[in-house]
Image (cartoon, rainbow, N blue to C red; front, side, top):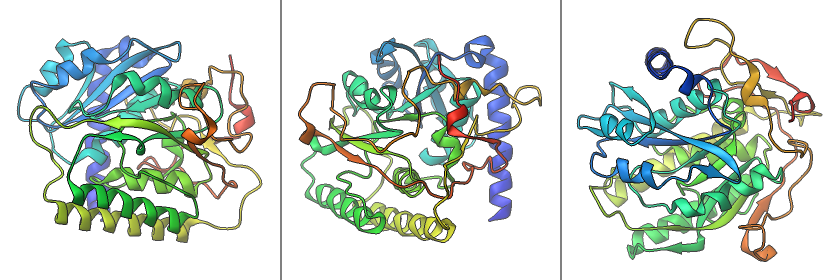
Length: 347
């Protein structure tokens, strides 16, 4: 396990260094919102996904970061040609590893907020404002779309049943109601991704969700849509295999977080950037990702259920407010500096 972790750290460090070197100021001075996309052999579709992304979200400038996870086709070149900042990783490790690296690039580049979507075009970019809005408003730290509250085009009864079973399982394990544990369209404060441990190379959605919940961050679900994949093939594999592996990640993450948690601390501590050393020149990165571009006090209060788009009825979204837990820096950058939430700069 240690060897694997060290190998992952080396791959991440080399890929991040190349990313900042190749993209220069565009990568080092990111706009407030970074849309992180993990892609593996998505030539022919990733360009249209990037093109469809809004230039602004919730009134804030946005940029796409595509992490090509060992693609053997023209995924990286196509994403670059369509205007995305691309991190081309030579080794295929899995969606979880690619997103973890993307979160790091967003934090080190100074983004205040991170939105994720898939490279296969299954999520509606027009719904990104709805997902990000509660975070920008200061009502939530992490927001996930929910097909249960919204809609889905798939007719596969096994997949539908699996979505329900895993949502119920995580709800019971964490004590918080969740309706969809594997939705790929999410939004969060950038520093949240540096405060939790992310180690799963695949099936990462449940690890991310459980870690965020058990660390005491405010989690909200909003209605959203998942469409059928129109181009290429799913990387999830057979339903039974996917279900077994996903269940293993759910239980493993819950057990890990259960052991981690101690007596509730008086105040949550959040890393400034998630990485104490810059990938570019060995110096400590500026704490730009800790700058919050809204007037709300971050992490200050439990959230009421957030409206889907600012006008939806209160029953249209599910919000979770938790007592602060004992947080630890994560996502492989375990030596991250911490700062008190009230010291986060606001503009």
